[in-house]
Amino acid sequence: MPSIFRRLFAIAVFGATMSGPRLCAGPIVGQIDTFTGSAQNWTNGAPAADPVVVSAGGPAGAGDGFLQITADGAGAAGRLVAFNRAQWSGDFLSAGVNAVDMDLKNFGPTTLSIRVALKTGTAQTSPGFVSATPFLLPVDNLWHHALFLLDAANLTAVGAAPPLNTALSSVAEFRIINSSTANLNGNPIASQLGVDNIRADAVPEPVTLLCFLSGLAVMVWFKRLAPSIDSTLKSSSILERLDANCSCISRRNILCSSAECSGCQWNSARDGNG
Image (cartoon, rainbow, N blue to C red; front, side):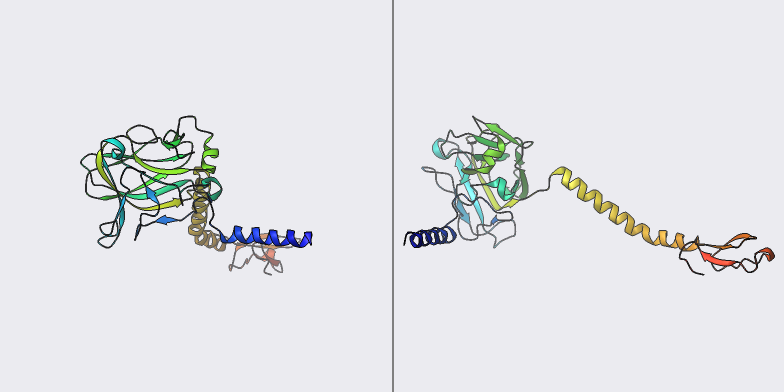
């Protein structure tokens, strides 16, 4: 009986694991938030008003919805911030997500400095990492595409942050902020920001990309050169006519007519034809 109970318990645990939600599983390469009907777990925390979904006017045109973030420049709602503790939390490292791209539009009166940030905890003072260089979003009534790389060259540690790989393995909160300096909470500003098509990416490392492009270039070069190489080989194929008394060489299809070479055996140096 004890062995039966152990088996039933194991089956129950396995079933619960497979059917239950994946807590802190992390993002998946290619996942994208398009805001077709909801804010998809993006918020800016109470007591500030949450971002809202605008049903039209996104990058794809009149029927394309997007997320609109608003800040009034004062108090709890003074900073242009949105964060996610659901599908954008967890283990980025194991998932292979090393970049996030998105579409952005500035609805405010001044240029915005957009960064992404990841925190190791959900408290306001929790440490983490933030984009070292902001994406400068002009006031031009246009949508702009931004790519944020999540690596040591493009992220700056804030507070008592752990090593970057440790932080990327357990992201508690992923943030989109407006900040002129490298901090996790943003700067007070009265403005509005449009966000759409937030996507998790796996961008090749520079060395890997260089090797791929080099290999591709070599393949293209050989493909273009192949016809001329084949033509050269055909035109320069040499037939050798040898016997014990003479040695003569002539081009393919041109017979050697030297009297001293009569009766020689023809051998193709290229293809072995007799």
